[in-house]
Length: 230
Image 1 (cartoon, rainbow, N blue to C red):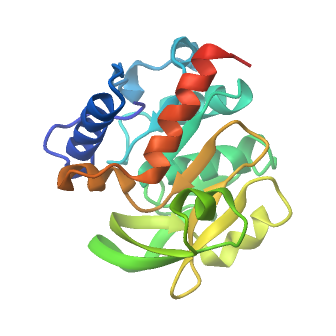
Image 2 (cartoon, rainbow, N blue to C red):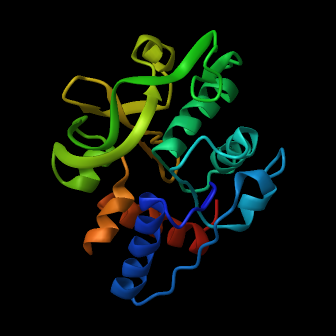
């Protein structure tokens, strides 16, 4: 878990609850560690000891550089990766900088004066909000849900800047989920074993005694990674 663990954060409580539920349901122990962004080095080789990496909510992080390094290490080493809420935002930023070569892309939350705020304040805050998401037909997320739309929960104020969404066009990082206003809310890279980003927080389902299908799939990918590493 790449992020700065805080037991008071609802999403972090949800992560704990979800993984404990999965361990019970699958009768197989799931081990995880919380890695503070401030303890990650430039190359973030620390994350490569794990079968899968989840960049978790509750940003801004103590170290944006640490989070971005961990995401890059996960992506380039083809580790199963899940980014939710703040993790989603930082994964978009990492991809823009290191794959698309947009070095000036920034996060407005970290730098309010950013010249190229790829991640910007949402037009309507989604703090403790729920909304409908519509998925791209044939996408991985649609297949995981088994339906073309879903109702999800948020706690966020920042996301992909709609005015700069065109910068991702034609890249492997596909937008595969949008809200009722057409704004991007889910992303995936199909060439990776598992690489899914959600602006919303699927981990919250664990607090209601349910396991979200995206997280179930993420853990299955981690098991496959352990059995047949790339």
